[in-house]
Length: 323
Image 1 (cartoon, rainbow, N blue to C red):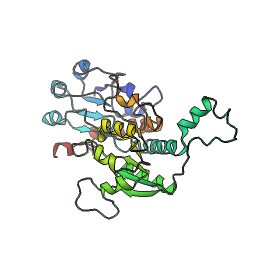
Image 2 (cartoon, rainbow, N blue to C red):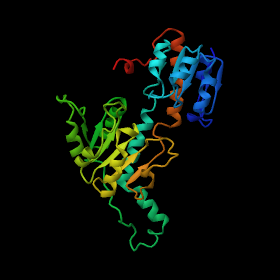
Image 3 (cartoon, rainbow, N blue to C red):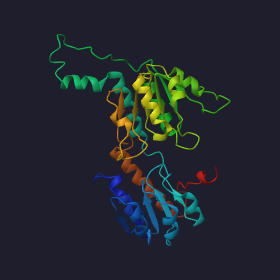
């Protein structure tokens, strides 16, 4: 079955093994990247299409007469027109729980950077501040321990649970947020607003939906302690970027660390990128991207294809069509 990967370059720089993919189905056509204008032509004869972030819109899906399966090389599937796929009876599947270790260590990298003031101390050394210090250890920037600090986790699925497990090893206190709109607080959960008020660090691990878009805005940021930090390795639109920037400039929160922006890559710029102070850390959507994670994703993608061909369960996306 002819299988086309539209943006293979987004998951590899020659450091992953394609053996599992090749064993699952053949032949393959790998494109490093695909523009919007190239999609229809490239998938015209394909029976299976794989996309990480390339948009498969209604027109492209309806025009691909041989198409039998759409695979998303990621967990998020907002780049696929699921309604159009359903009209053609083309199943869509994603890959799940492949980047847990990579994302969790990224979250703690953020927290440890803030706790140890790594950015500031590294810059101090580069600027000669240590060399000029009268003391063996300059104490220009306050260092704190994660032990005893309260970590608020918003989204307690695979990733949130894994973050909680590692936080316990750091002797952190944990607050698991109840849904923001909930009227009943489940056992083991804490009301959303209380998590915002009490936490020293808040980390987001929920999907983006209409219910969670701008989950964190000025109201929620105003609830946070001035000493608290906000971390987002999930989806950019969970946070209102304008409100976050205002909170940083006003000093209302201690800082933020984000791995996602509203536009990626930010070819049109973003005001957050111009923020000049070290209490905002931005990484380029790389939390998921360990080589182990990317290899695991490709292997699971191959499993999805193989199971589809054998009429076995294969992570088919159905929930978005029944909301």
